[in-house]
Length: 92
Image (cartoon, rainbow, N blue to C red; front, top):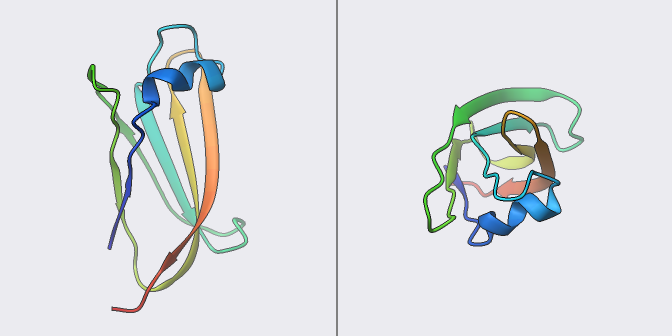
């Protein structure tokens, strides 16, 4: 199963995440953990190229059904923004 994050307001993220004005993220990292967010199962970082539409899609595969903690980090050379959420993957 793929998880897709869509952010139509990515251009405004720099203000919320204290990224320098006009700065867009150049890297996205995800850490997939158990539901308590304590036992990391997978960590992946990728460079990103955000275009003028300010949309960013991140796809990650899960090993199976269950509840996962997903930490998503966006950053550039000088700044970092982090968010976490619980994802429930249904049985197939």
